[in-house]
Length: 334
Ligand code: UT7
Image 1 (cartoon, rainbow, N blue to C red):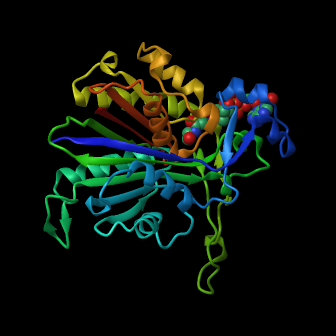
Image 2 (tube, rainbow, N blue to C red):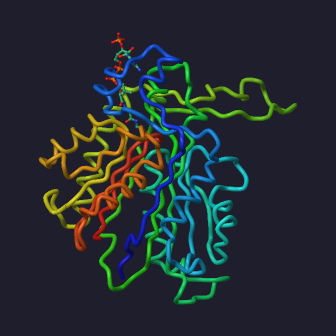
């Protein structure tokens, strides 16, 4: 049985915000941002909801498909439009995916990798090919979406974080197809964030029953200790790359292209160096997108497929790392 990535999609908001535009809010400059991160611009949602972006990306991934064949929708996000209903439920309703089970997952920048890992397990166990518990043999596809409007949780007065992030969505259609090799390995891992290096609190209702100290204890915007997360990222990306290669029985040279989370060019360069791979094998989209958390990997996957350079049979590795702390990698054959 092969679980292949059959198609992908991507959607970005219209507004392009260049590094120099950020000088209006914080003391920074283009040279610093480019040198320390590789980012030159990002997209920021002004009129687009997360659902708009998710649905646009999903429609591209579902081009030419019978929507009734979709049995699963997983949306990876830390910035859902609302807590209830889930983004998955909203996408299912908006697209009319009658047979899909839909839900969200929250594992920050590794979210898309975790989504594939879950979908692979559910498909392999025959859980997707069912309506009301009865097997159909036709519902054999899963839609995995990463979508973020990080601009809503960024602290626009904090120059160490607000310059990094952007908004967007990416989607991938997985298919259970015995003719394809598809996913060769998937591996995820959680690491305890003992120093709270990457956090974002949220607002809760005050209740007449709880102690005040329990209410809103955390900053309600994204807070990151950059250098700590950088060190974690460099180590974690190495670990998940190694483990996924080992599980697939491959070496780094067997991988045609790498599609890493788009957090910082220096993290990607360090992975290339560690595995003695040319940087040309790594998809770099962050210059135009910034870090879009769970949407970064599927957006970058769409970008590399869109170049037309991937050939049938090429082995591709997807790598994610981020809040939680969390990390993971997936190797699949095109
Ligand atoms: O997606 C989840 C995973 N996230 C990541 O992987 C992000 C990992 N971390 C990073 O990518 C990097 O740590 C950053 C890009 C966030 C920061 O780069 P850095 O090389 O670690 O810089 P730093 O935080 O150590 O700051 C160096 C200097 C500081 O000045 P002093 O104290 O040395 O005088 C900062 O105040 O750069 C200063 N600085 C800035 N200067 C101009 C920080 N932000 C800015 C800025 N513009 N926007």
